Amino acid sequence: MSYSEVYSGWKNDPEGFWMEAAKGIDWDKAPSKALHDQNAPIYSWFDDGLVNTCYNAVDRHVEAGRGAQTAIIYDSPITQTKHKISYTELRSRVASLAGALRAKGVEKGDRVIIYMPMVPEALEAMLACARLGAVHSVVFGGFASNELAVRIDDCKPKAIIAASCGIEPGRVVHYKPLLDGAIDLAGHKPDFCVIFQREQEVAHLEDGRDVDWHGFQYGVEPAECVPVEGSHPAYILYTSGTTGAPKGVIRATGGHLVALNWSMKAIYNVEPGDVFWAASDVGWVVGHSYICYGPLIHGNTTIVFEGKPVGTPDAGTFWRVIAEHGVKSFFTAPTAIRAVKREDPKGEMAAQYDLSCLKALYLAGERADPDTIEWAQNLLKVPVIDHWWQTETGFAIAANPLGIEQLPVKIGSPSVPMPGYDVQILDEAGHPMKPGELGAIAVKLPLPPGTLPNLWNAEDRFVKSYLTTFPGYYETGDAGMIDQDGYLYIMARTDDVINVAGHRLSTGAMEEVLAGHPDVAECAVIGVTDQLKGQMPVGFLCLNAGVNRPHEEVVAEVIKRVRDKIGPVAAFKLAVVVDRLPKTRSGKILRGTMVKIADGEAYKLPATIDDPAILDEIRDALQTIGYAG
Ligand code: COA
Ligand code: AMP
Image 1 (cartoon, rainbow, N blue to C red):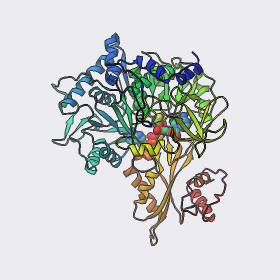
Image 2 (image 1 turned 90 degrees about the horizontal axis):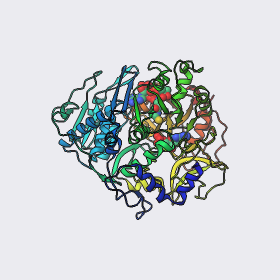
Image 3 (image 1 turned 180 degrees about the horizontal axis):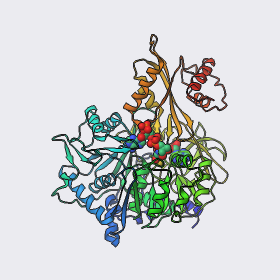
Image 4 (image 1 turned 120 degrees about the horizontal axis):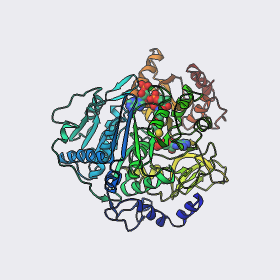
């Protein structure tokens, strides 16, 4: 079947399409129907099915006779370690960990925070929660204590599973002190913490609260898989919104299983047994869907890569991993390819490896710029597939579905909507726009299985953030257009979210941190264009009257403050002091105009600007830090 046949097949009979896809999952009790719309606009999928995610991701492959197949390859150039875990080994490791969690009181519905680097134990922790029907929330290692504390208070975990440390180039990330700090800051206290001690740094265990990963599994009964309802939350993943409070995106179990299993063949074109690699981090949605769950549910071999595209040890690392492990489909962020290209523009490193196993490269997480796509196409001689999705959706909204049909690639476009997504471009009043016209990108409700059914403990925020601007639609927060051939183009965010090295960050959250500095009267943070990371945050500070200290001191303090409060991942390294911020007469800061000035782009003087002279001051300030050239 062609893509257009599959897409129109879904559109004509969404219920039939998803019930058919649901056959790829082993249910304890098959669902009687797919969509439940009695609470519209809150929808849910496969509610009356009973199923276990871990069973589908692990046990069923062992029972089907594929236990000897490698489930996880751990390749860590940063610690010079490699090892493989078969599906049979994975089952016993996960069952044992789940048994130990259960022995300490973790049950279906309890939340468990996971704060771990890229080690296979992170996936095992996720799967152990899934085995019990416990709801995990993985927190990215680049977040500081304060961000971890905010998540602890929001989801109130019974347990936290953490590693003693992570390893970044040139430094050890002290996870355990960060965890202790977060628990001190948080109002909610977990019953216990499980610490995976890494040999690079062994952490102190708090008597009565912390248990050792291995020690607490001693002598426990391995846990069986607990069937849960299709609508049961599989996990919560926090993502940036417009304010400092992150949004707890919920993923429901049944839809998650069905959609990811479907996507592995339809989008990534892999068969069970093939090696699939997503070079991201378990702390992001890409890591949830395509390092852990998608490949394992589908019976692939997945790779847990602990390293960077460059510097661990060189720009040939990606190609080495692909050649050595026989990767068929490879997924990474454009920023990673840009980093490789910058170090090895001629692709000499890639030429040292036999990459004949690789059939396609997938890019997502941020806009894929044409130069990067063309460079990768020329180097690898395989399709380079840009695809567009979000933490909220859990799998691609738009892609080139190689496993259905390879559509012509249009550079600059993530191609076409996937089944389940009726994507529309809307004007401010919510009217559909014509092909080629730029507007807000919205998806007609209901969203497909696998997408967020709600926000954790925040239904009002869910409705307000996503369902209110355009009634009957999900508001993606992205702006763009659809061309005559139905190809989508993603141009910009419509909110305060910026994308730094494929990481989604909130400028609003950074502004809250800056505003908390005692000398700062007012501030703004914008995302300026960066050749490597796509965007970089830049802060503008107006100081309180009477602050006579050197500006550099205040700048250094706010930079440290963001690193301490949000974490190194914010990559907040640039700030300038200005007298005033450009505003409309009603007091709204003109961030969009500031971005255009920083990027050296032409801009229209906003009609409502209070005092145009301020824009010259902003340009001068930006020039002092190398922008607005
Ligand atoms: N734990 C702790 N700190 C982390 C971290 C983690 N898991 N991941 C990143 N950080 C830190 C980095 O060490 C860096 O700290 P520094 O300011 O002390 O240098 C900071 O967070 C910013 O990280 P990042 O923006 O990712 O830059 P980087 O220097 O780590 O990597 C590239 C830069 C060029 C390699 C980048 O292009 C890249 O590939 N990043 C990863 C892209 C990615 O996988 N995105 C996921 C979406 S699919
Ligand atoms: P995250 O939730 O971290 O996955 O970030 C989602 C956001 O990243 C989207 O809303 C887009 O703004 C951006 N994004 C993701 N993929 C793409 C893509 N292929 N092209 C352009 N922007 C993208």
